[in-house]
Image (cartoon, rainbow, N blue to C red; front, side, top):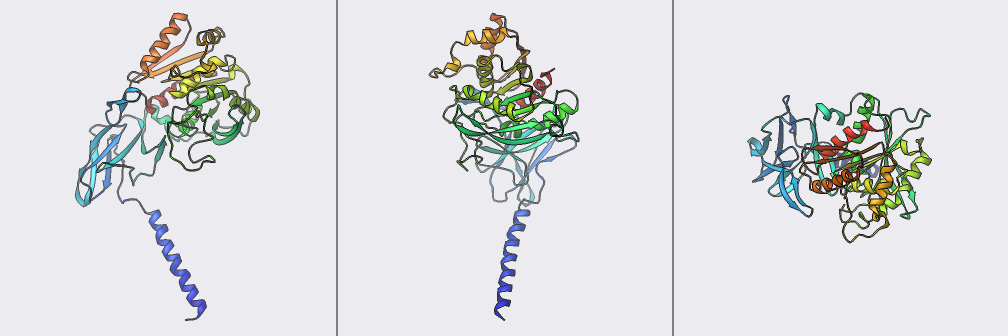
Length: 400
């Protein structure tokens, strides 16, 4: 065999070797369907694990259980056992049809929590990655990509002089924005502790909800800005100059005033780079948990900036040891804010949320002062299921 022929054979062998790896990557899933949604909305979960002795599934489709947390009693997903069948395939079928919703779940194999190898749809929440599936119908149809005009989702970097760094934000522009010349109102939508600028667009289904509400004529076309509320971060984990590191909720500069103080930097960037209505009547702010805390304190600190305020399962007051001008003279700042008559001050929380009492006390104070607000109470606790519902209820109330 000549030298050139030997080289050619070697190249073919290498190509076949890498081709087999590529095909393994393409066909790496097990040859079973999981989850399988039946016509009646019961769901079957399957896992091929012939050597396992115990397989369970956990997720928010199961009845919740009350557990202790650093923040008090809170809801946690339930757990159900799969049954081992032929060929080492384990199965679990829900006892009843599931209600319309976007659900998340994981498997637990002999005590080891893992994702479903047959379901490619995953979402990260802080440091946890779970599979998701959707049961359509009712408000859950708003979470789908339907055949309607679609907006654009972009990730932009802006400079924050207050935080002395470049930072990343996620921005939704409504259908037709790029081709038009009109000005749009802006809704600033803030995440909870441990989240980032990816949380609302992924877990919250913001783009799908806005596309569908706008198409149905239920929401006014608007720009939605989803910030990173962690003042110590440039961007979401894996998207900054720190590259890949494990996400954590234990970040410096959390709920100590830096985010609120720096927020005008975000508004300034958006007003300079997008066709916005640059007035109080054209701006809304809302957030979940820590984002609700930020929304409360940002809106009272800058009472001429937002006409619409939403507190979704909001934390209310800072920690006892936190000292910041942002949280001083709260009574006086609220008095000024409400004297300017915001068009909407909207508070929502679940009945079993660990922040329920704090919200109840805050509403009592607002009532005693005669400050007008709208209150919505839902079932459940501190969960994304509630926050997606709050977004679908809040967005249609804006800019009318």
